Length: 556
Image (cartoon, rainbow, N blue to C red; front, side, top):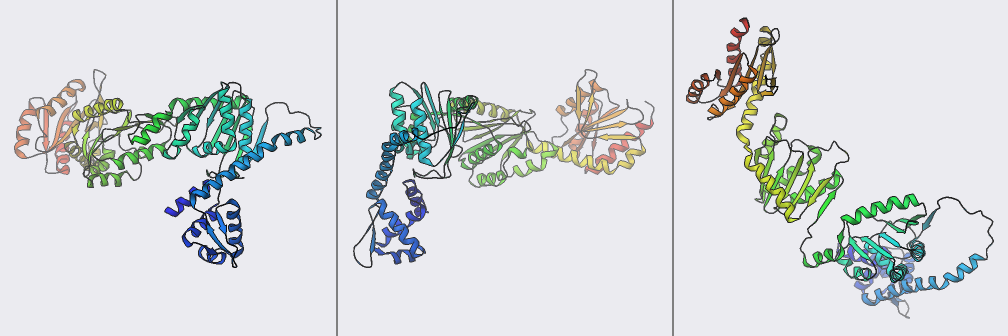
C-alpha cells in the first residue's frame, strides 16, 4: 500500500504510473541493466527502454557510458526539482510563443460570418484549459468566482493562471475561491489567501467551474487529479450564455454562505480540534453515511429518537453497528413509539439498548453521539425535497440533548407496554379464531378500536366489539398484564372514556395473579367495569364472550 501511495504522488509530478514504478524499482535495485529492470517489472524490453528514455529526458534517471548500459535513479528531491523545472519551461515556452501565434493567426484569411447569440466552445487538454482560464481572467472587470480542487489550484501556480489572478487582484478585482482544504493543501492556501477570499467546502467530485463577471463561465471535468499539466484527457466547456452564468453564480453564492473560512479550517487541521459547524445534508445516501459514521465512532453514549419502522432512515448495517456498541459497553438510549407493527424490531433492540416509549409522534428523528454531535432527519422520506441537518455546535447539540432528555424522562418503560401489546395481539388472534362464535351473536370485532364520544373526541380502546344489528350496542375493553396491571389509574382511564361514549359494557382484560385480580375486581365494580382474568389469552376471550352473550340477547 505504501508503494501505491508513492506512485500516486509521483503521478502528480508528471510521471505516469509505469514510469513511477520503474523509478521506484531502480531506487531499490541500484545501477541496473534495462533487462534486469524489465524482468523485475515484468515489462518487455522495448517498453522498458522507452520508459527509461522518458525518465532520462525528464532528469530523474541517469545512464552510464558502459556496455551494457546501466541506469541509476536520481535522488528523489533532485528528481522532483527536475520535474517542476520541466513544467515551468513548458509554460514559459507557451507564453513566449503566444504573441507570435496570435500574429500569424491574424494573417489567416477568414470568410466565416460571426455567430449571433450565445457561443459554446469545447477545450481538450489541461494546458489548453488553463490557457483559456488565463484569457478569461485578463478580461475580468469586477469579479472572478472559482470552485475547484486543491490540486487544480496547485497546477495553476505553474500554468500561468495564478499569475493572471494575482494581476487581477492588484487591479482591484474581487476573487473568491471555494476548494477542499486538507493538510496537504495548507502551504498552497497561503499563496491564494494573499490574492483572494478563500473558503473550504467538501468537494463532491472532480468537476470545476470558473466565472468572470456575468459574462463567461468555464466548466471542466478531469478524469484524475494529478499534477500533470500536459494531461490531454481533461475536457472543458466555456460559454458566454448569461443565463447559464447567472444560475451557476447563484449555486456558488449558496455554497459560499455554507462554506468554512480557510483559516478556521487550517487551525482545526493543525490543532486537531474539530470546527463547530452546521451542515445541510441533501440526500438519503449522504445521510446514511453520516449516520453510520456517528454510530460507529461513538465511545460513551448514543441517544436515538425515532419513529419505527423507517427503513430508509435506518441504514442496513445499523443492527450490526448497535451490537458492536453493546460489546464495547457504549450506552444506547432508544426513544420510540412502540406499536404492534414495530414490536418485533423493538424486542430485538431491547437486548442492546435501553428502550422507552413516547406518546409523542415527533416530526423529527434525532441521533446524538457522545453528546457532541447531532443528526436530524424528517420522520419520513416521502418528501423528496426533504433535507437533513448535522451539527457539532455545542449550544445547538445541548438544546437537542435537552429535548431528548425531556422525552426520556417522560417516556414509559417499554417492557410492560410491550407485554400489553403482545397480549393485545394474542387476544385479537384468539378472538379472530373464535370468529364463528362472534358471528353467531352478530358481533364485529375491532382491535384496536375507536369510538367518538359525546364531546366529539375519538377514544381508543384495545378491543371494540359492536352489535352489527344494533349499532348503538357496543362493548369496549382495555388489556393489562403483570402483577400491577389492575390498578386505580387503569380504572380511572377507562371510566373517563366510558362517561363520554356510554358503552353497553366496559371490561378490563388481564392475566394477573388471583389476589391481584380479586382486589382489582372489587375496585372496578365501583366504576361499573367488569374485570375478566384468564390463565391465557384464549381463556380470557372465552370468558369475555360468555359475559357478553346474555347482554346481546337482551333488548337494547
